[in-house]
Length: 377
Image (cartoon, rainbow, N blue to C red; front, side, top):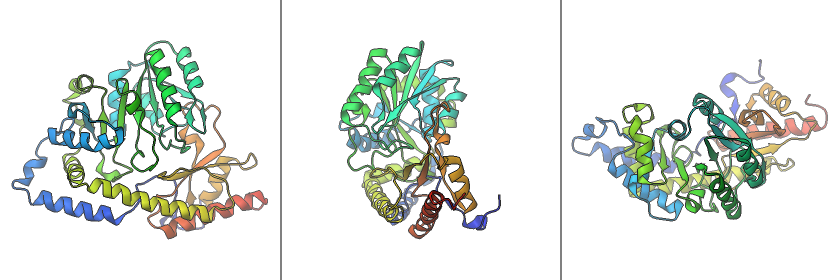
């Protein structure tokens, strides 16, 4: 498709990257200097880090305890090379092929593919402004015999940005306990949402596998995520059978860098700097899109824009693509292609600069408002 702009100047509002912050530059340079100054530094990366070394687990436990509100046993901590590997690991260990993966009706775009590769049947659960609806979850479990597991993203949900209140979280836990279902909680934006409620893993640690990727709060290129298992025993049961399969192992250099950042408290500083940059981009969006209704939350890397019936989401995305701006229609997040809302997700952190974001959002605004006047079709 021909664009008014060259491909080099396409503004990508599809990818929710971690925000750009100079604190990341400084922290990375410092960590690499420290590692290079270590005697025999080559030994640090000579071996695989199967689920992480003891120091990785100890520092991970220290960092994640600030989010979970309790001390963690380092033996509960599993390092993987990202959320997708963590989910593949858990699906294969916790649910047999043919079992059911229950999740929000709109969810992490890659979840459907990961679940399908694991041979799981996917079932979407209806959402409201607080996220997953407990009554709909109850109905889903009642309809699904056999092994089941729940995946949920209760804090700044992707893509709707919904945040479950504490009462809703407890209700979800109650439903899972009644049906004997374990929970996988994705808390990828937990460190960026300043008013984040306690994770579900803080409410029901005995049935929850807590996943925290560093991809949004530190750096996507590190390719690392932490799992907090319900117990040390359950962590071992999941990882021991696959300790010779290196596809899920964390990268040693990434693990070393993150450990340095946690130990020096640079990790907290990076996350705070990114939250500040995200807030600036939210303010820019509020100014440029002042005449358009959308939904977002503090710490979200994107906005969720419901569209009027006369503006179909695919047609809107196509019109923007013709103007060299890329967005994501709700279809890409749908679990079962049923009852897909007429809405789009627009990233605020994909562009490298605020100026580029402003240009992209201005095109979004002009296209939306022009359509409503009948001039953009």
